[in-house]
Image (tube, rainbow over all chains, first blue to last red; front, side, top):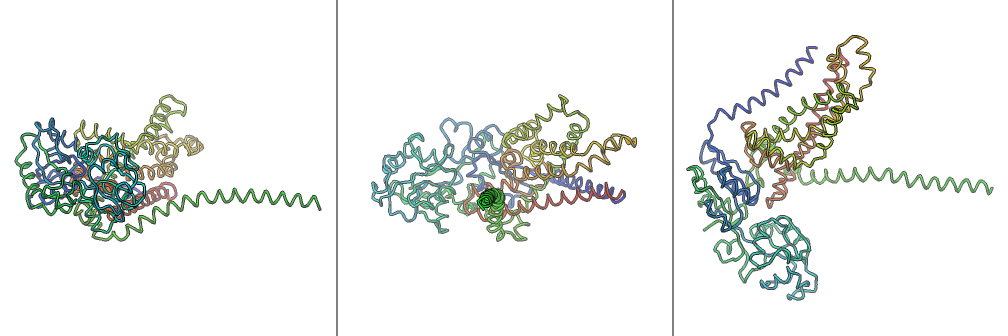
Length: 277
Length: 292
């Protein structure tokens, strides 16, 4: 009887104690809180910047949530979050309601398998490959093999950017494989000698440095690298933005200044993006 | 002679037929077990190298590519604790009502049971949206461990209630008659006799529920959030292990090794929790039935 009761009692009290200690710790310290939400592409970078910001400013806590670029824009505009993350250039009608701050850039590169003989493709050739007009590598100077076209799934900003640059509509594209993210695209092209795809340049460079069997092709005659994205010569890129409503608080402004400063360039590079000059 | 040959032939065909059936019956579970061990082996093979004391006790670094997963383990355990503290009393209570205080064909019981069956089949993303609307927005808990735990509780309740009810129904009526004959009141019968006897059923529900809760990604992304800090209160947002694995493998280049490490930790956590549940109920059963 005693044994049983004390056992049950200790179990219950342990649980209560755990819950209590958790809720008390929160109310004792006065924390200033910043909430950031939006693009999943920007989130890991924002999280790293937030950690460094916290370590330099005591009593500040920065919470980074995700939910996509549109969500970031909406929540920042409505004041549901202090800062939104948007991984594309803002549309004209979106601009008046928010303040936009670029924190990094991301280039989109065309990739083929390392064993592919092709050294370069013109924009016109890429359009023809993606619309199915050219179906064999032989037609663009390679060996005779059918081309595997890798396209991104609907709703990704890399897809939007790719289509906009090559003046295509997604319905015109005749893909053999549809992928969802950079990692998957790289794995697909590395595993298929006749595949062509497009991914974030930073991620591609990281994979190439780690021995993955892909190579980047130049676009519009410009070599695809984080360097050419950084100096603005590479044509296919997107800005990674932080947005706020039109009257950001001092703390919000302080965070954004920090995110745009040289102090975080190593973090930007570590996430395979290109720092702003 | 002829006759004997015939019977021999017949025997041969039956033996052949049995051989086919036997091999089929054996091969199916073998394949299933092989798949299970393949998955487990793959995770252990890739993940065991990542696991160290440091990995389990330090915070994430470089978006999870390096560093540990300590805050994420803490958040996961807290979310699960909230989920179970809420769902077990509610679940057992409802199961008692359904099994002991309503007839099987009673309209109310049938209504509750049907709704639970429908709820059990609802995709988790729907629970996520519901949790986001109710706990995060209307009740104002924001993205927090509390919101996540409560959403998971809603998700786990149907499974928990149904298996607890089955467990109670499986107790022979003789127990109830016997208790009534001895003049024991219904509360005491329930507390001292029926519940302990129904514990195995409850345990099955608990194991299934914990499994579903701990694997949940979609619903938690909407409710407990993406923040990988060490939580300081239940109202802080906290990233669960499943979300961390998802983020590492799908969103972070070079995150695969730590994704495997986290997956291995998740499986170990599941085994530990299930083991603890079995041990606690076993203790409880021993105290209730054997030593009284």
